Image (cartoon, rainbow, N blue to C red; front, side, top):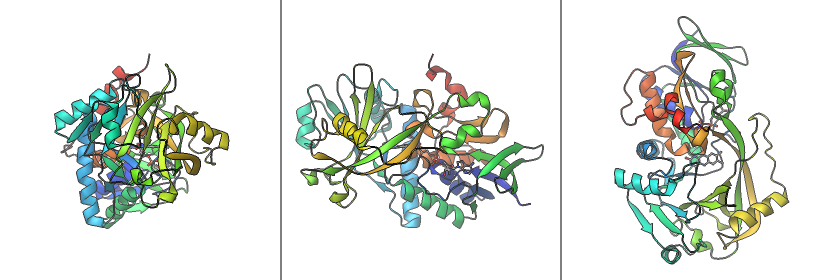
Amino acid sequence: MTRYDCIVVGLGAMGSAAAYQLAKSGARVLGIDKFSPPHAFGSSHGDTRVTRAAIGEGVEYSQLALRSHALWRDIEAQTGAKLFQRNGCLTISGTDAVVMHDVDDFFANIGEAARRYGIPHQTFDTPDAIRARYPQFAVKAGDRAILDEEAGTLFPEACIAAQLELAARAGATLRRDTAVARIDPLAQAVEVVTADGQRYLADKVLIAAGPWLPRFIADELNRHFTVTRQVLHWFEIKTNPERFAPANCPVFIWPVPQSREVHSSLYGFPLDGDPSLGVKVSHEESGGVTDPDNVDRARSPQAEIDRVYRAYIAPFLPDLGPRCLRTETCLYTRVDRSRFIIDADPRDPRIGFVSACSGHGFKHSAAIGEALAQQMTQRRAAYVDLEPFRLKRLAPYLRA
Ligand SMILES: Cc1cc2nc3c(=O)[nH]c(=O)nc-3n(C[C@H](O)[C@H](O)[C@H](O)COP(=O)(O)OP(=O)(O)OC[C@H]3O[C@@H](n4cnc5c(N)ncnc54)[C@H](O)[C@@H]3O)c2cc1C
């Protein structure tokens, strides 16, 4: 039986990054995935992801995004793939709606991170200033905005494919369409058993199973994770398609109140090519808790699409029409206060895990994979500090 230095379970955003970085460092790596990534069953599909550098969820995240941006550029140079389009992220905030990803001071944090890390940015202090530059957004009295100029769009399927290509080129063994059934810590090694009965040994195992992660970790950790169904929408452009061309439209985030108590957020992307394919605009809702193996992936009923258009699109993006051209279903795996958890399994320090990062992890995944690879091969994480995301650091964020 071949013995590996490291086995990576799950080859989505986090696992493909870790497998590539491990292989690049010379480790003997086996990567295993139950599907054939990139695929549309987990958390990393739907054409685009927002990346930002000045991070509203907390200034501790900016180091991850900035390092990831450097890595995406390096991977683009090695593979020729287009992974990152830098055209800024505009965060719009009204006086009554600043909560985003459970963070009350999201908007203030962006400015703080931009100043601390010297990230180029512009501020728009009045609705008129926003309208003059970006007429596609129907801002109201009291709205203000900040443009993170280092931000933009990531193409998640291309990011995963490129990292798996580089992992294979560097010597990693990749097993696709192979589900891991068990991970057993033995005295001399960790054994990974697949559903088809194969057994593999390694010194270390990283679990990067996204929404399936809770099945693999200690029971006492499961209570921290909630998997919800999220729907992505592409709405038709009714008027002024030029306003959504990348030159005129950054990615955007807009926390909006649904009521005094309930806050959600709207986010969207510039056109990626043909205007007739519509603009991808999504919103975050707490959604129903779901089981990743039994998710309803059918197109939403028309009544639900009409509700989304009335609540999230028409009041904010009047150039978009009610016709929804495409939907995709994707999975969020949230931890309290939308935190990340990246740590060793309390049952055995040879088994590490990385959470699916609460709906905002893709942009950080390249740097997280690199830092995990450095840790697993006994080197110090050279570029970023994963300490803020250890389990023991979660306590202040837990809900009562
Ligand atoms: C709708 C939506 C929008 C988002 N928007 C953004 C955004 O704009 N910006 C951003 O930064 N982040 C965003 N995120 C979050 C981001 O996409 C996730 O943080 C990230 O994709 C999580 O990656 P992962 O590797 O943990 O999970 P995945 O990419 O889902 O990978 C997990 C892998 O594990 C495999 N696996 C599971 N079980 C097994 C098993 N038993 N054996 C073998 N393999 C297994 C799966 O097949 C899968 O390939 C969004 C997420 C969603 C759902």
